[in-house]
Length: 252
Image 1: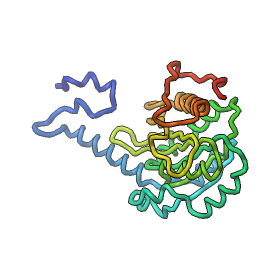
Image 2: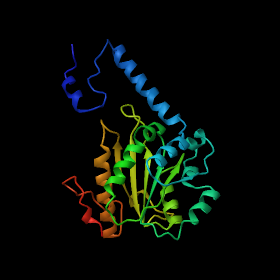
Image 3: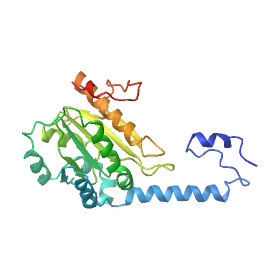
């Protein structure tokens, strides 16, 4: 006999209507849970092949810069979040050599807490973002690739480049329904000391089951244009583009 809630499973990936076998779950439900847990652990522990990803971007026509945090390995990344928010000295020096370029925006990519997410969706998402911004007047910096970064690292990178805004695409913390989701965080006037309240987040990007690449790119383009117009990002900046389409003329 099916659980009374079974008809609702088509509307959510949440674990509802699992059934019952005595005082426990059915074997199938237990095995599905264990498989999802293993996938989440693998996504977190997987080492990002950043050089391979870099070559894919170059082949697609993107200009890139490879940077490093103070993290020395994946275990340290999980245990020391503070080190993932800081660049090493050579990376700082490299960015300073670009600081006179008057960039409007810098795009940063990191595996974060899910290398799988970036490997599965990163290139397609960047292609969609590139398409959304292709007619804009913004001067974009080379894409910065940084393994084992935390979201706040975008503040330091944007500040050192002198960019007016920074966007970091990062692998989100895996759950028991999704292990390959990307989050995009926008910060206007990035600088050290910014808080999460000064960022806008577009989360759950993983086509086809989550937010699509094209819609995520449209939302990012809209929020970027509004941040430029209003001079701020974060909790005061709302995604009120009810059309879910972005008109290039919105750029100031």
